[in-house]
Length: 261
Length: 216
Image 1 (tube, chains in turn orange, blue):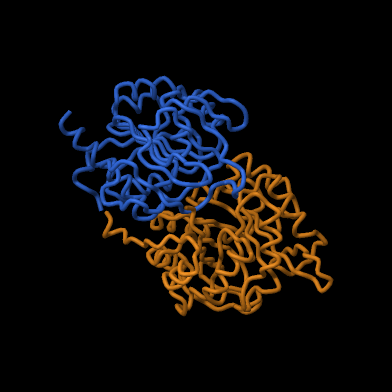
Image 2: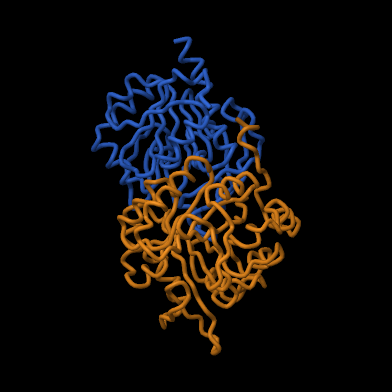
């Protein structure tokens, strides 16, 4: 049986891991490659690195991080942040990333999705969607780190990105992100029901029950979290045990490379 | 980290323009071998082990293999029953025909069709799935039955000769996970992305065939 995935996300600024609290405050949680290695060891299923550095001169730092991660980590990982062309995508994939994720650039130029899917395969194109449920109940796509409303309906956009070749959707709710009070279940459910590809729920994870809810009620295929892992308050294997106890198929083995090899 | 049993093994990872080979190279290095990446047919002559990785679509893979004149050398290599490991598209390319994006003739080493996964579940089949071992072969040394491996694919191999299928995974259909025939092995999942047990697949395959290399 296919297991549900727990994905750890690292926001990386100039080579260091940070996590935005509602995208405003930033706290430093360490070296991304060290953390990635530790999380792999502890049984994380997948990793995402989001480069939030403003300047593009930083590209070499990101490439170096991707290469070092690929050298040491033998689980899938995704890289995103500031990728605007298929050459940008190729650089990350050739450096060792398994998938790339695009957000604002995809909204500004949707052909980027089709071009990436055609050139590298849908399996490595993850479209990230930041959405907010507005007071009138509509679900709107935001760009630029969740700051800029687009007027685009989240469900329509999700459907379009899949038609264009996205292999997966990483869905962040601007309502719940940073609050550790649970994922946005109605939004997750609406998007997951609307598309044929896997949906990663993101934004709001505070404990294992939130992840269980996102999967059972929200129909998410994977759950993404950052803060709750970075500060050691919720060991990955503990969270997985709780999810398994709730009847969710999980990968429980977390074999040590040195023991197995 | 080099393994003395693997130090002299000539491992060739075939580069036919399928993109990212880095993770396969690193996995093979991590288990103690020193692989070479090659894209010319002559590379197969001296190889002790050939690894055919790959992602993407079958049509592109076959086009790239033809363009690099690798189709005949691969056939000759496999006809001589020399050690060969296919990964993901490197399994599907061995089949008779792929239905991905139309009908595309493949290498026809393994009889059967590459068909779309059944509707009703999310496609691609993406993530860690439980792999049931039908036969305990040396490829699974140190790997428990039911261990999870990382899959990413939308089409799967419907094998005409099920006795070659040594492991399966369930995803609406019974998905061919590992095929073995003689010294040919191929996996639908990505062992280089499947943690410690994935690396163990590479190690087991290389060690099994390093003994043959010595005795040859």
